Image 1: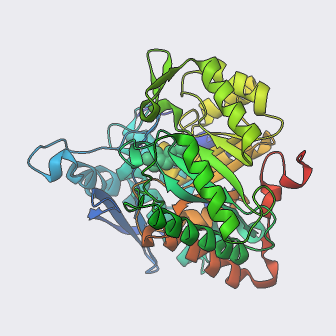
Image 2: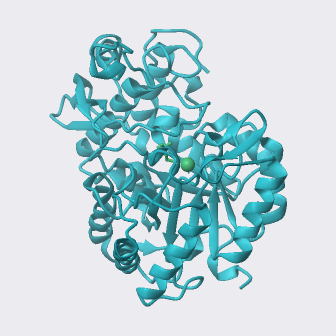
Length: 459
Ligand code: PGA
Ligand code: ZN
């Protein structure tokens, strides 16, 4: 995409593509200062925070999250790699890149807006994966500018991002049990989540989730299996087989007084790229190796036995054939979500649409590195009739930008981890605030958000 470094773009440059028409691309006052520093995420790891100040005094802040089960095609997270500083994880170089070249280039813009700010940083970086400046440096500034522009326009962030149209309160997908690399591979499946497709509102969904979450905790206590929570706040499971988790959560749903399948259903993230080695999927907790066909068969079996409405990353990020197989077997009944497969990357999403590899795309800002490219990825996903699931990372912060992003873009689904820990609750709480502020304009989408929509499913 980049044609060369350093040249400040003008608002009327032809090559900013579909950035120009968007609500978020309104020109605001000049940027007069950019600051950046190292702060810490929910795992205690260093990350980048940036602030952007405009001439009218508006200030915006952006904090960057960080994945653990990262996809191979994600934008580059720049870490210093110095064994003497935060076990190689410090981000001082990314901070220096903001304070140096990024600051210098953006302060020169005379008519800043989101598209041009992001494009400027992309040109300055001049790599395919943002490895020169670091996607963490670029994203911190991209988010901070977006918040400053919203303040300058005296609009809440969701309205700045989406205009008056952004009013869709998303269906939450909430983790009850965490596994995979978020829980030292105690079980292989990374996320056991629940959705409440029939709940009439966001708060009702949260209440239902709360009850199931607490009931799961009680059950684990009774069974002597409670050891704590995994990276995203779901329970760290002490079980022998992956399927035991279904039985555990089913029991919790029933004890909480709900009917599985109608009131509460399962959504899974297999994170299969983390299981894949040499053409085989390794279930370490069960000491089994599966071929693509065998994994597809196992998942189809789960879909028959348990009320599953969505499966994310059922196959490895390069196993396009496996994705096709899954779509052939399950695509009509269950939402198939690509996370590591697409990495919020328009090129990869286009390829997936051409191959009909999935029916939904997981959207993570730091997989691609700018707000503009994230909006493009959502727009492409939706224009193909697919679903967008806005998502947090396993390493999170108190920043609740994604709650606004989900409402503004009418994504319809929001995945931020579990129902505990403030870096997760910050996102749910922000949706509550947005819903309140929208008042009668707010619309809750519920099970309609799923592909196929919950109401149209065969029972
Ligand atoms: P990650 O996990 O942030 O560690 O990549 C989240 C996910 O896979 O959805
Ligand atoms: Zn995932």
